[in-house]
Image 1 (cartoon, rainbow, N blue to C red):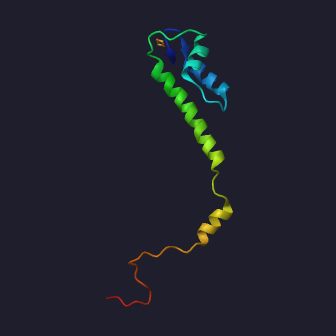
Image 2: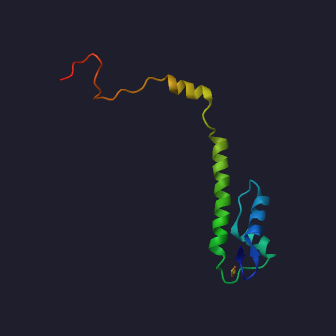
Image 3: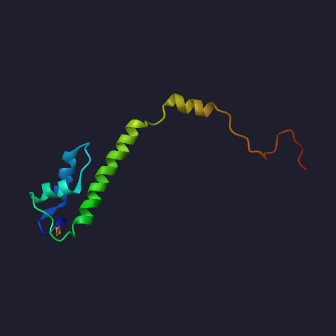
Length: 100
Ligand code: FES
């Protein structure tokens, strides 16, 4: 699929550039220049598509960074949570209480 028709490049070129960015956040201007061979945008119709692709790339990085900074709970943490007594609702009927 063509992303830009004024300075033709397609989504494969954008994806390749974003892949080459690796763990670096991308900027739309840099992506455009790289994929168009250094040309400047003309009509701007490709802007929303390009922004969406860059946003998805940058959001994926943010999610990965969050996973690194806040790793999933360990088995030991889950066992402690399982061992904790369950909260009893305030209005729960006690077992030895007669039913009225
Ligand atoms: S379609 Fe990209 S500048 Fe016109």
